[in-house]
Image (cartoon, rainbow, N blue to C red; front, side, top):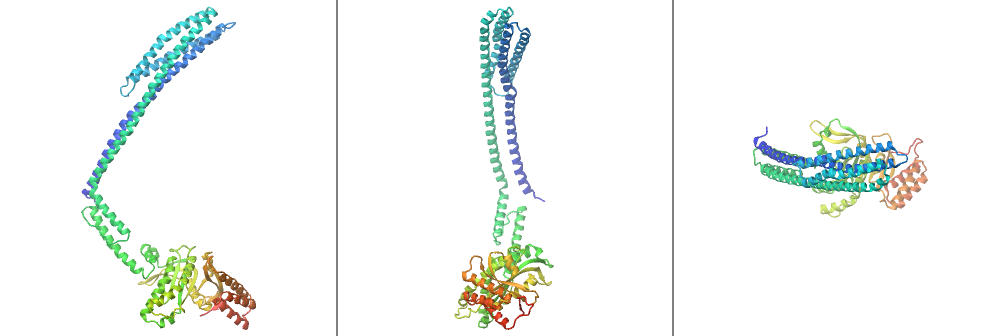
Length: 577
């Protein structure tokens, strides 16, 4: 249940902010309502009044046109009495319509003047209203008299008098139209003033709203800061502690200064840090015995501990130190431990940097693997081959370091070398062991094949051998050479094996030439063309003296010439040891 201390603080902050928000909203509503009233007056009164005055001007012009047509109809031979009558009716109708428009305009102007809630130029509006009244009474009265006199002459068929009097009527009408247009312009000015007033009110409303919002925000922030100061300090201390834990610093407990919920949270945080510190010690300790990614997976992903395991495509590597026996015979135990620790450190780094998992150290050997969930299936063969090349590149460095490490010159390190076997295939992956002890590892034929390939390096004088599936999966990132097709111990079908020569584009010309000669010799060997095979292999040795596979295959062919293989021989070689 939430304590009252925290609740009061939170509710007080919320209430204060709500009050400020409501006050700002009410002020905005009042100003928006006033602005809306001004806009309503503009659209409902000013604009219609302007439209009425414009229609008066248009109707006056239409009456003048109708009068002209009446004169034309009468002066025709014979007179068009029907047209005259129709145009006279139109003339009278337009006059009545002018009166209605004038009354409507005056009513709207009177309504604007009478509305005390909106600012307007009442003096100018009153002058316009008065001039409309004068225009409709005095101005139109004179025009009606002149028009009546003109129509009298027209009825008397005094066409000469009509021609003389018509300019006088036009002059009066033009004067009236000019006065109407002047009124319309004055009304437009007053309307523009109303629009300017609306814009000013709008700007004022925006400014006042902004000031009110700013004041409300300032007051609200000050109020919230005063009320929530204690909460913020405690939360900030928790945040700093969380950042320290995120950065890996698990030795900074938080001071518990209050007894409310935040104090309880701080105490729980301290207990969590103690537990994390214990877990970290477990990870650091076991990370030296098991790959840290496996440790993390076993802790964070319990599905990795499934006893039934999973079948997955994996790449397995076995590495062995050639010459270890002779080296160990001349060293005391302490020196041997130093040498082996340095050897494992140097050779493990390429595996780790290429995202491999070191499964175990077996005497002087290393077993590692690549595959899900640690590496995607399309990458693990390539990464294993890259690790193989980097491990071979480091053997010279290891030969130079070990004598200095032991402090004894003349240590027979030149005989030390690597033998690496790599195979790709399906393996059983999971936690395997007994009820009291388990190991996350891989099992299956691919593991056995990798181990056999590591041993087969002795036969061919090579540093590494990989199976065909590994070569295909590695892609074009590396250069390979097919060494032979062999049947290793424990298997019945032949397996094509390859040697990783180097990274693509980095091989020396003599290395490429040797590979081509060896490929030619291997093809001739499989076709029992012994002389061609011998010639190609000797050419390979001339380019690369001491090439192990070329020397080994050369000796084998010499033996097969003396003791030819059976007719069903498929070119594969059995390695039983």
